[in-house]
Image 1 (spheres, helix red, strand yellow):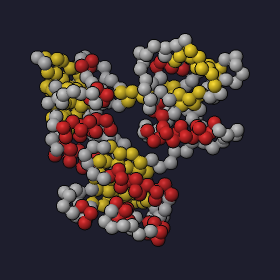
Image 2 (image 1 turned 30 degrees about the horizontal axis):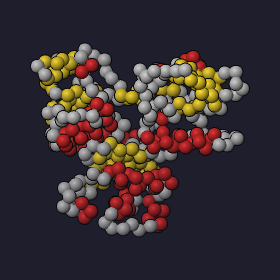
Image 3 (image 1 turned 45 degrees about the vertical axis):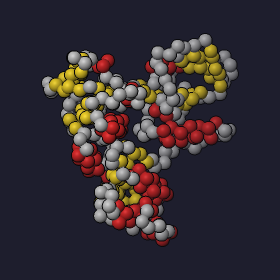
Image 4 (image 1 turned 180 degrees about the vertical axis):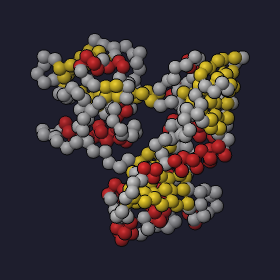
Length: 348
């Protein structure tokens, strides 16, 4: 969230309570700004691996500025950015290889749908190499040679480091103000307040187990605006059910309980609608994995398909409002054949 350049002139030098009553003061360069509250929203930036030749790699921002498509591209990583860039570059005509340090990609998503996604992307010519990490990168005769930890050599034209994102905290001099933080971000309490009273943090710079997504950061900002407008705000920030999606092809989306983490009081059902009338003639085979609790309420969904993100959003009200399948069916009949009809099937 937001632009940050760690080499910019006049980085934030300190956060402190000065001799100005209850005002907090933040200084950048030769200027000082004081207020009742300070909100840190410096976001995150691409993580960069450090290995011999790593200066020859590129990040996601570089990719979006490419003037010419590489004939072959190697992507290091298996998260959101890696999977989306692999889909984009392969569709444009580049031969893409992904190097994944572990044995799977997208670890926060349902294993079965991730397996299906990898199979579909492999069918589109994208190569996955698991349990592999870069050891050295060399430029030879205008092309790059990537040596892996297994001793293998891979010749490629372009290497992308898509190994995640890290919070922008180094230039903030947080220690001078006694604000607690670590490499995962700034610690905040249930009101998004840091360890320094009156100083708050939102978005990707926050160290909490919340999805690092734009809508989440916006919801946090809305919460603070409401909080600052009341004399006695006591309600904590409560994160509602959050839908997230990887815009690969096909799209992988989820909300609520991950099917892999369903408990004894929950049960999982799978739906494969490749033969339904909604997908007639489309060569589309969406797959849904739903989690229901012991009151027959939908509490989680993993969806794989071209319209997976919209499908998850369509059932989000049932999850967020805690409606049982019987309550949903009693309240409405959806148009057919539409996304609403798919929702009806999941909540029948």
